[in-house]
Image (cartoon, rainbow, N blue to C red; front, top):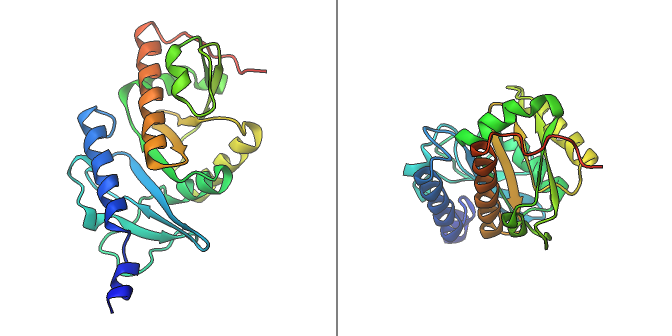
Length: 219
């Protein structure tokens, strides 16, 4: 009986960690209202993730709200809420990158830049020391291409767009949805949180200098 209850919800430490991320991101203004969603891979075979529920205020999350979702996007065990509407995107990112955690934020700067650079299909970032906070980046001269895709309320179709994005840009660390926000990921939740911090710093720096840092896709 105890084992059955334990399998119905994410491990308490994982749920607590997601609650902590929600509070920190809310305090930074990156997930206002009920925006944003976060997930962590619990098992690879069969794929199971812990994810925040739909419509939840990320600054006031409780560990009991975190849901356990299978690779088919359906809840596992007893669930008191609905999974994020963007679960399909999280599952696609995990499948394409092998990520252990996926984080989605809705900051002012990412939203503004996603609109400003949408005609170019993305934003090129280079010559910032903070780029070295991204996995595998060892120099400020690195040129990071951040693709921008159009928003869509059809999440199955949106997941298909993300699938094609990775086919075209397999080395990216994140992408923007136009007038919506950032998706980034990492091998662990701590890695993914660091990537959010790096990208949000870079977006604000570029936005404050006029938003014209770079928009040409890298070759």
